[in-house]
Amino acid sequence: MEVSRIGLGCIVFFTELEPSITVTEQNLADRVRYILRSNIFDGAELERLRREAVPSSNENATTEGAVPQVAEQPAHVDAAENTPVVADSNDDGTFTQELEIEQMRSTLEEAIMETRSTPLENRPRLPRIALSKRNRAVVRALNPMLVTYLEASRDLCETDSILFGAALAVCRIIGAKLSTAGRTTGQSSAIPAWRTRIEERIAKARALIGRLICFRSGNTRPRIVRTVRMAFAGTNVSLSQPDIMQKLTERIDDLKQRIAAWGKRIRRYTERSTRFNQNRLFQSDQKRLYKSLERPMVSGTGPVPNQADTVAFWRSLWSEPVNHNEGPWTEVVASQCAGITPMDPVTITPGDVAEAVRRAPNWKSPGLDGLHHYWLKGFVGIDDPIAR
Image (cartoon, rainbow, N blue to C red):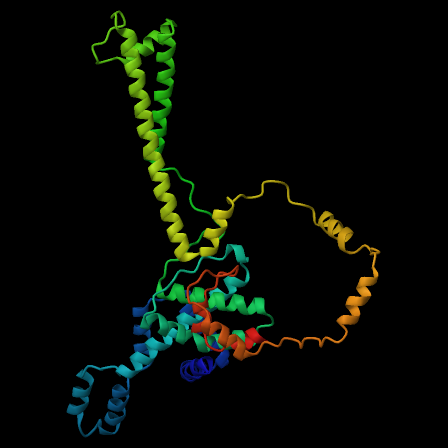
């Protein structure tokens, strides 16, 4: 319906401008849609072009009424020409609404095409959006546009990609923040600069402790002596003092206490950061939290197995005939189970899907597809494609 309305208006206006050129409504509608999607003109420029191309109703009425009165009332004609033309507010609102709908349609189409070509593990993580009137209005506006995609869906995977693309389009329209790294990417391993500086201080202090212990043990090499003098610089301590061994012990103990304090600072930060990340992960994705607590996340570093070797391995297990030792007890069990009525095949109806979606929490941890239950509740008309 949207294409027909745009095409009909364009074909009438284009025929008046260029009567010698023959085009179709679909061709003109595609050109209009391309201009709107490619953002060649901004909103102000499009509004100016519309005002120039489509005169207002007041201007048309003034022009039609002034034509038969040119000879009799020239004063009224001059007054009409000097009167400013005021555009109809209804036309402005309709044009703005159609422009927004076309932009939403373009965003939806791009998101669905992007989702179809993206693996599940590389999909962006959908954020939790606020349940505001504006966000709900955007979801309701996309519902009629999804009907065509859902009716043409062939399987459950395609339906899931369509719904994820629609959710992605909603997030982009409302300006929600999306993670571009994908859902399988772990947290950043960048070490803070202050922690790097503390670790360098600890390394230097440990090296200095080793030099001081060597000097206390009787090693008087020039490099060791030079390091000891640098350690006591600014303390009025001379290596020729009789209590130099006591001073060395005090200096070593002081360095060890500093190392312990620096280590506790790093340990406090690590524990606090771990608690903070686990609390956030519990609120957003409990499944990932429990998996991380069970075992550390390790990525495979070995070579990828060959497809032919993999097929041969599993074929040797499942495709080779095996003779089992069937004892007499199997016949007894078979005779006992002969009277059991087979279970009827399970048929999932749209009502079953609607009931399951209704009872599901909105923002619980999503599955492998990354789609929350909120989107299954917000997009209408998905019960039949999922059940089908």
